[in-house]
Length: 258
Figure 1: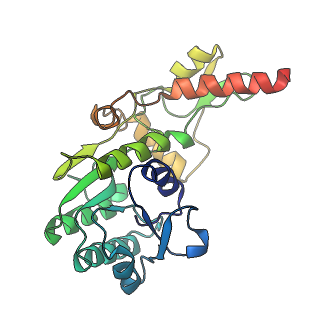
Figure 2 (figure 1 turned 180 degrees about the vertical axis):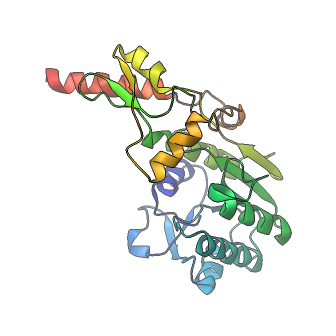
């Protein structure tokens, strides 16, 4: 598994450690998850990747956190080439929704990587992720919930569910040659406010930046695509944002009571 020291990688390892032998490829072995074998595997060092992937029957290629698109593509291509040279049996790649058909903006690096994996001839599974729900769970501030989303739906999914799905793909059968479009249960900020019994208020975007761009995408309905791929791979319903928000409020109330 590449990028195993990140938040997603650590969650996947928690699911895998009881099912199969795990080798964590990390840039800094000192930050490797505890309890599994670790090898140095740096996206910018192809030789280290070849050594890290040696002997792997299945590789989870977790996308690089690099924000510069050209550099991220180069890092991913290094990993694909290393996997091919190391004789990896199959690759599961954490891609992004829309990468199968689009190659602009958010999807450019993911699309290029998917195409490189297909050209490599390696057996593959594409795990196309939505935005993580973890970063979007509404919070009550001064007795209300606000957003700049126009009340439109979001198809986000929690990192924990996506990690479990990745572990299921790596250890299960029938996934090779598949591209999964993972989405969570569709939700909206007004829906969560209603469930929590507080007012909802639409506010202007704070200003230019990543969240302003994402909010514009939400208002345009671009995050309302919904599939049942995640539920099918999990074998259960994915966690809903409303449920997480209700639990957070309950836990907060219990802390105050204590």
